Structure formats: C-alpha cells, structure tokens
Image: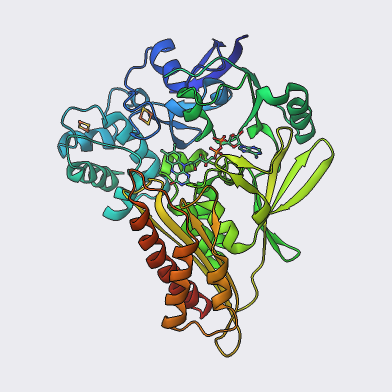
Length: 155
Length: 291
Ligand SMILES: Cc1cc2nc3c(=O)[nH]c(=O)nc-3n(C[C@H](O)[C@H](O)[C@H](O)COP(=O)(O)OP(=O)(O)OC[C@H]3O[C@@H](n4cnc5c(N)ncnc54)[C@H](O)[C@@H]3O)c2cc1C
Ligand code: FES
Ligand code: FES
C-alpha cells in the first residue's frame, strides 16, 4: 500500500512528509514530530487524553487519520505557551491544583481552550459539559473546573 | 491500536466518489466523521482495503427549510445541529438528540449522515427520524433515490444503502401547526450510548385531540423500533395522562431489548415505558407552545 504526502501546520510550523494512510494523527504528533505532550489514554475515543485542536475544533487525535488533517492546522499543548509564558489555562491548572498525576491534563487544557474560544464566560455546568469527553482518574474534577474558571477570569 | 492498511481516496465531487465506490466494489468504505468507522478499524472489526473520504465533497453540509421539508446535508456535524438556531427553535427534538450524542470532541466530527448510515440501533438519530417520518436521499451510479425511514434500517449495522451509494440528505416534512416533539435518553453516564431512549412527536387539533403521533425507540431492538400500536392508541384521542400511560405500556411491549451490561431485558422495558410517557408529555407541552 502506498504512502500519501501530507502537509500540516502544527503549532504554527508547516510539517510535510509521506505517511501511511492508516497513521493516526496522535501517532504522527507523538512519534513523527516527537511532541509527546499529547497523550494516549484509552485509544478507544473515550478518555480525551489525546485531544488536540484541529482547525479551531477540539478532536480526539486517536480517532483521526493524519491524511485527514493534511492542509489543516493543529494546535497541541506544546503550542499553548507564548515566549515561554504559560497560557492562562496552564497557569490555572497550576494555581488551582487542577492535576495530580497529570496524565489527563494536556487533553483537559486543549478541550477547555476550545470551550473558552466559543464561550469565554462559561457556567460551572457548561464547563462540566464541555469536558465531558475527558476522563480524569485522580482529581474528582472539582479543581479542574476551578482551573478553567481561573483561566476564564484572566482571559 | 493500529488499523489495517488501506488506500485513501479523497474525491472532490459526488460523481467521482460514486464512480470510485463502483470501481472499488465491496472492498471500499465511505469515511465521513470517522467516529464509528475509525474505532472499528482500530479494533479490526472493519478492515476495508479502500477508504473514500467524502469530507472534500462540497454542498453536503447544510440545514435549511425548502418546499415543505427541513433538509439536512449528510456531512452536517452533530455540533452544528446542536448549535443551530433553526433546529433549536423549530425542531427541538433534533436538538435534544444531537446534544446527547457522545461528547464535544466526537460531536465536532461525527455527521448525521454517518449516524444513520452506520445502522447502529444504539445510535440516537435513527429513532428521532422514525418519529419525525423522515426520508433519506441516497446517490448512486443511477442518480438519486429516496428511501422512507421505515424501509432504511434492515438490521444491526445493515441499511438499505448499497455499497456504491452515498447518503446525501435527510428530509423531514415540516410539521403542521400545533406539533411538538421530544427525545429523552437514559444513559449510564453523559455521552454513553442509551440504555434506552424514546423519540416522540405529536400534532394536536384545535380541541387538543392528537391527530398525528410518531414514536421511535433507541437501542431496544436490532433496528430503531417504531412503536406503532402506541402511536395508533393516541391518534384521535386527547393526550390525557391515562392515554399517555397506555401509549407507554404499548411502547414497552413493542420494544425488543436484550439484557447486557446496560441492564436486564425487564429493566429496559420498564425504562422504555417511563421514557415514552416523559417524551410524550414533553412533546405535548411543546405542541402547546411550551418548551
Ligand atoms: C465515544 C463515542 C461515543 C458515542 N456515543 C454516541 C451516542 O451516544 N449516540 C450516537 O448516536 N452515536 C454515538 N457515537 C457514534 C458517533 O455519533 C458516530 O460517529 C456516528 O454514529 C457515525 O458518524 P460518522 O460521521 O462518524 O461516520 P463514520 O464513522 O465515518 O461512518 C460510519 C459508517 O457509515 C458509513 N457512512 C458514513 N457516512 C456515509 C454516507 N454519507 N453515505 C454512505 N455511508 C456512509 C461509513 O462507511 C461507515 O460504515 C459515539 C461514538 C464514540 C466514539
Ligand atoms: S486516547 Fe484518544 S480518546 Fe482516549
Ligand atoms: S490528574 Fe491523573 S488522570 Fe487527571
């Protein structure tokens, strides 16, 4: 089976290459680009650890083929800082103790980023619904909600 | 998990897509939102040799009313249905449905066309489309044909779509005045497939009598189930608590659940009865102008 040429802007940098069509976007990001901030949790579209922003929308990168992202823009957790300064969401997870093991955190931040882009002042219920595709086995979510509220207040 | 190898095709017109499907035969599958197909490929429950990605096709992404129909393009995402003001204001039953499908990330990609074409009785749109009396438009080598929703679902993951056809549009007759509908889903956790769910639509006449009713059941049979006896029991009668209770019982009898990790057969039948009553009360309230 052949490969396919792709060109994807990841965190502002154009990435080109030849990939097998079956290469999942999460594997391209982690293995081909070495951006291991995007995690693989369940690998079955449930946990949201692999969430990235694809052309402005949060998606589960374990359930998108790399070829589908060709010509599009991807934002991962590594692209959230500007000039070494933490994004308010990243700061919020630190300040509000929004993580314990941290495995879910990149996905939580990316999905919350999409949520805040659409709704800059979400209610607690809207935050909880917004992160309903992301699982955290540690925190009980209370401080994750606070972290998103912290960021919403700063943005 | 890594899917099997396949060739990737991304046609830019519907004709090209259908020609590709015709030439590739049974070894090809349409890729829409990918939110059912890609998980199946990762589990190797599906190993198509070719994927025909229809996301490059123009003009299959719309929600509009024309000529007495609400028409929805197959590539319309759940997130768009969830956000649409037309859907929220005039077709709240479809908003109810899209809003409870999976989670925000899945809804950003998953399409209504894929939700129907997949033929999974656990999916939520099928029962809603049964209640609304929808039609499905499919395009193949000989052009378009329209399939009534009652003839579309044939069994688990089996539909009337042929391998060389693409579902292009869903058509819903604009309901007459004094109509209302609601979809109520009971799930173990937010975003899960339904334990059971019920879609109900009603139309009332000036005196409050029910002149039209549609009831579709999710995940309690090999296909979405139309609760025909329950619909018939309502038509010609006012939607009193008693009549709604009778319809709930009849819908429960029409359901064909099997016991699994989401509950026993008996439990699911009880859930169908309760949800049918709730959905009918809500549909009635909406037909009377409420929310
Ligand atoms: C974690 C998770 C939870 C979910 N929960 C729910 C839920 O609660 N309720 C629910 O209803 N769904 C749920 N889904 C399913 C989701 O809504 C599916 O994505 C949807 O049913 C299929 O749409 P798709 O566009 O992703 O189709 P795809 O996955 O691309 O395709 C599905 C099938 O339909 C065929 N197909 C797709 N489009 C067409 C077309 N236009 N013409 C011909 N054939 C076509 C494909 O070849 C394939 O066989 C869930 C999915 C996940 C991953
Ligand atoms: S790894 Fe993608 S959703 Fe869990
Ligand atoms: S902090 Fe451990 S999974 Fe969320």
